[in-house]
Length: 71
Image 1 (cartoon, rainbow, N blue to C red):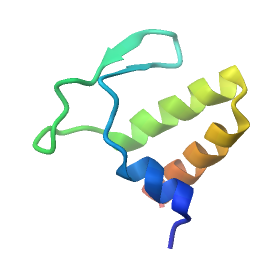
Image 2 (image 1 turned 135 degrees about the horizontal axis):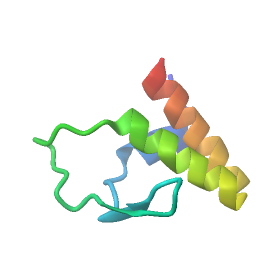
Image 3 (image 1 turned 135 degrees about the vertical axis):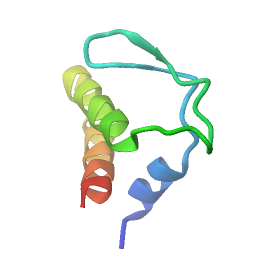
Image 4 (image 1 turned 45 degrees about the vertical axis):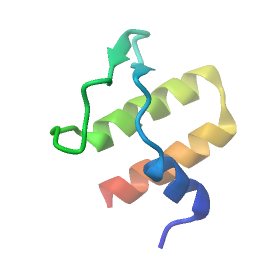
C-alpha cells in the first residue's frame, strides 16, 4: 500500500521537459504509453534535483516514489 502523495506523484503525467541532476533539460514530449521509459531512473534523478534545491516536501514524496518503484 502506498500513501496518497506517492500515488498522486506516480499518477501524474510526465512533464514535457524536466531537468536532470546536471542541469540539462530533458525532452520528455515523445514519451507515450507505448514508449519504453525507465521511470525509476527518472524519479531517482528528480529526487537528486529536489535534494539539491532543498525542497523537503518534494524530497519526501520522491523518496516514497523511488522506494515504491524500486521495491
